[in-house]
Length: 388
Length: 81
Image 1 (cartoon, rainbow over the protein chains, first blue to last red):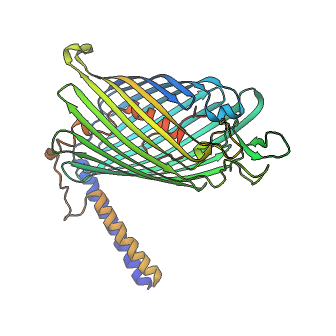
Image 2: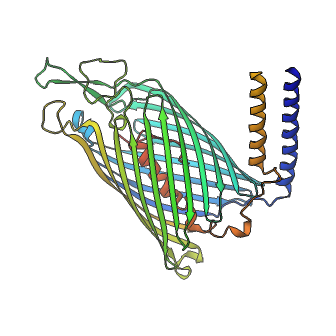
């Protein structure tokens, strides 16, 4: 038995060595990759629905330093005005701003691309600092692309109007993926990502409600209590297909599961169709469904009914449907700046959320018998892209 | 015996995986040649054709849904109450 194990180990090592040698030679003699073209994007976004309005600008710049190195910068602003159903049941409407910035460095060596990114998101009661590293490698005659990535985020959480409140959380991400060209018309991608959170994962403003017959309203409120850890795993399959005429079909399916016993699925179908030489039309249909977290309830039977308590509608059982439309205008060269290739795009998404066990507490009805909540939202993105 | 079988399975998986992923195996050649990729190289085939728009919609879904990850975007703050 020992001899067989030795033989297996020797075979393993020999094959590994052989493979690495041949692979190194292939990589050495093969054509090197190229970095993507320089570009600048300026965007205005607006989200309007469920009592919330969020809008603001965003800028993305990407510039090659040389044939191997590119740098990128991203800046994003959310101006939030909220009177959502969660807020209106126990608090007052509020306004705030969130600023997010990212800096990226991309390094290409032969067929391997390394990407390093740091970012910060800053709002009055939440400061997130993140760092990400990813690596991708083209192989098998450039039919296959392998990728790996890790990320870390450190978050400081405070509560407006409460100088004493100060909490922290951390997030760790590990991801891997493979892109594979299958035919002259079809390529697929398979990605997995594991995310681990630890620390204060609650929303500091949210409360749960419970039956309290000792007061006239019949309902009492207490703060949410979440577990201090959350581990999740997602896997996503994507496919892009070039149709027999010049148009593209996209398919995505993602499965998600986590330690809070939430299972979710989303499936998306996209279609891109050029109209003449100057227009492109995008259509999108997406369906998302999740079940509730194990510690979620719309109405608890009494105070401190269990160790963990949540009434965040994002942790309830619900589904949503997205319909998306987009138009891109490819600006003729004689009209564009310095003759650079430019595009102007307008995208509109309409999302309908249907909650299965989250009731509308603002409705006039007996406690626990309110109608189930649901809302729709319109999302608009208008942006301008220049390639130089 | 179980150890040997497990080692054999692992070695086979590893060898096939290594050959498949690195393109070392002689019988398996890249079947779509570079000159046959004009359709795949068409800009309309790019899922990340509008990266700034993709970042935004990913942020919206992250804020409104529990599922996260494997979507090609990094983490960040919220602004999602």
